[in-house]
Image 1 (cartoon, one colour):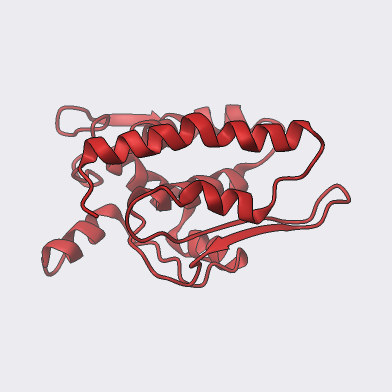
Image 2: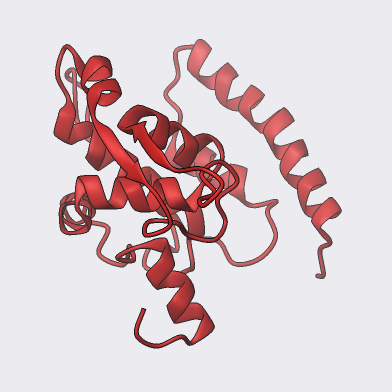
Length: 190
């Protein structure tokens, strides 16, 4: 079936509007949400689907895993930004994490710039920004320059180790968004 963007957004909007109600009802009635209930929420979405939701055991409760075609490799685009955020936050986790993130200054200039950056757009914007501001731009505006800043500060190897610790063996993260765009566009020597 061919979906236009409008039809897709309408389907997603309908899912978002009605599906969480059934999940909320299940949780407020004291019944736990099952993996099947979560997977059912994705059924109305068009195209190929793959997901894995994992919550480790904690507080006397057993681990939770919901998966649908979890081994299938799909292009995840900006979903990788969540792994960068989690690892960067994990590295600075402490009682004064906010102050640490605000005090850590990152360089912003044309050497770090990447296309798809609605917030950080050198040469129109240069200088330093806090790690917190870079994280916010990466997540709230899907800013690729901010993503490259966080990939650099957190360390791509450490982000990959974090992903491996979650047993997400098929999840790949590029060295940078610049490198990813270069690869997709067939550029050499980037």
